[in-house]
Image 1 (spheres, helix red, strand yellow):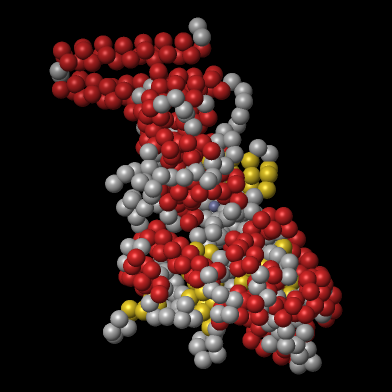
Image 2 (cartoon, helix red, strand yellow):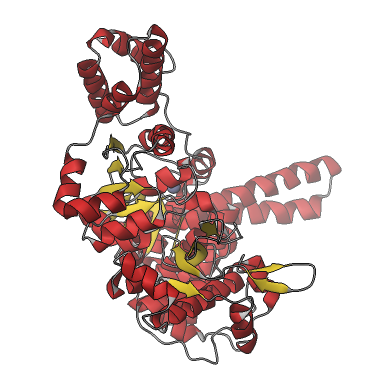
Length: 589
Ligand SMILES: [Zn+2]
């Protein structure tokens, strides 16, 4: 089994840009030397996730997660180190020779990823090679889907057959069991058969572009259900995916505005007409996780659901998670009988965007749908609004929502404000797990300071290597980091931190490293500070030895072992002398 050689990995690492790759998943903005964004690993409203381009590392000041570009991908995309390396290589158009590909022992997630990739390609080719008279081509033409749309969303065709996909998989050495696991095949009493048959296929991509699942639309009226979705799998959690996010991420980076629609065809219809920045929830009610995912890519959310009663109900349910995720939320009301696809087809992109500009506030939407003559309804609207407004931890939004509500319902003036001031209002989101970090920081501050300087500067790491042993570091974390540092120094010419991080397979250690690097106060007298720290660590070691020895001496005095006692006293004096010399040299005497 051939591993990817280290120098190839090093070369990929050195060409990678962590800002670029993290930006596929997190919307980042420049802040000083670094980039900041909302952490994808914990729930937060204000950005504490920092990416350091100079060091090629990331670190979250909220939850403490940190690492290299590879550890980011491993954590975020739930893949192995090798798969993370391949991901970066693909982005850089670096070819990893075939002998190294697919040969590694792979995780379940990787195998599934391989199967979904294969199936997406298979379906896509079947669509591209279908002749114009075929049922799928007639359908895409009727819906006005251009080749550009078909290609950029990787749309496909599942042929009208029980085993086309299974047969092709067999030819490529993919076991049918994997297709079943990915929801692409089903096992009946007699045999295993293709799950998607005679359907237009929508590959569902994770935010990083990996195909994780499929949706399929029936092409003939007899086929039920009209929409079929592949089930959840270890790589596909429906609540954590938004259809179209991958294609729209560049747009979000520029605009920060998201359109939320219900279905695949709504989204493709908008795209087709040049309205970008839409994502679709596809068959599920919008979850908190999806809202948070959206909030990482934009600041404003416009809900554009169907105008039928089901669409209105889904809108009611979607508002809360969006508000809670800190998105400035608006509702686009389409005339009776329209969905986004049909509306844009009839009124064009300008007509559609006009609707978006005139979107309702939450209070407007409620006022429109509630019967305010009924006192029960009035009470309901008030409670719902107050509940929603207090859900947002964005204080600017809270004020604006309140003002809008009071404008729409003057009777609420004052009431809302006092409700929002009451206990429980403005509860913060779940606290970040900082306790452990505080604990580590509180312990061994000198060791911590020195390790920080060593990570920051190769010359200092070399200086420390000449003066101390890893065992001089008593805190197990710093001891481990120093070992890795020294190994890195001995190993080769480069002393790059992201490479160092990749040699560490322990989360806690990685996060401490990235935290130390990101909190270093740059600049003055680094070397002098390092020397001071070294002195204090040596002094502490000496003191510990002396204390231990003094305990022994006291025991010896009781036991009357005089020859040993004399020797021990001599050693003690020697240590004392060493301490004095250490302090003198530190003062430069
Ligand atoms: Zn975090």
